[in-house]
Image (cartoon, rainbow, N blue to C red; front, side, top):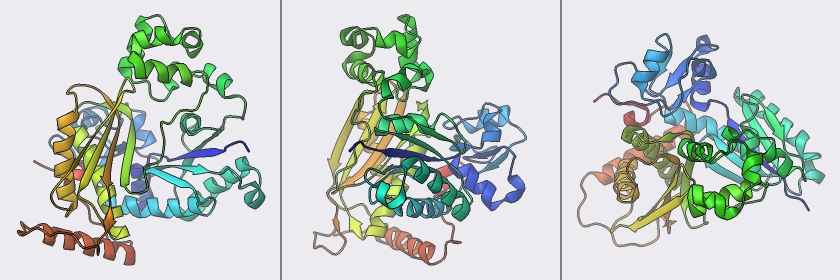
Length: 390
């Protein structure tokens, strides 16, 4: 049976939620990440209206203000965004038992074998789009293909509120018609290397050998691109192991600025911490995944002497571990944070002899989570998440 995957992106998610909650902002440039004057803040999400001014995610906020001085700037509200994300993911789960949430605003849905229940997968995809709009007020863009990678690319081709299908058997043809800039995973530096080698289209890349491509992009990058232009499946989006709780995100622009990286790490730590609390789980083992702009992927793991006690604690450990591995100056396309070897919160474990305020932080976060689940109007998040004053 042929596989059928959907990749679904929530369109300009954070900004769209702000426009949903503030109808008077509809159709106006909304930039989530901080207020004008916030030092060292970065753009987290820009509405499509703001993108027309050249504003994009991971951009220093000061630069965004120069490009779009009349924009609406907000620091953001991760608790609210997680609330809306859960609403959307609940809709996805009605259509498949296999929903792989990649981050707060994107997920894969495996529709393989669901035809008897829901009919043609393309019709199912359109029905999911309709349900999300009707029930949450948000729009999503959907890509459908026989591999997750191709579905990922397809979802970005007709944004916002789009649907793009790669017909089974047409994978290679689809890739050969794709502009090189649209090939997911090719960062700015990799694109420059290919162009210097005279390769400007996927067809030109297809005509060259694997060793030639590896001489340009290295072993991993060359092998990835050789398979990709042929529409072949890869393990780019392999699911995390069941004994870990993880979150990862891909970025449309390479992360190189430390504040942009730290903000991205904090967002991932917030998601992981929330999932641990919600699942009644705990962990003291941390994993960091880094994918560079040439598609080289590295990871690092570390186990501490005590469990993660709060989002702050997880974030500090994640930063320390990240900077042990990160090659300063290299562009980052993807970041992942994983709490590994998780156990139930009630399982016996050696406790710390000393408490430096972490127990209090943990109780506060648990109380926030309980209140959020009882009353979605509760909106509390970390100030640094979207750009704090310093």
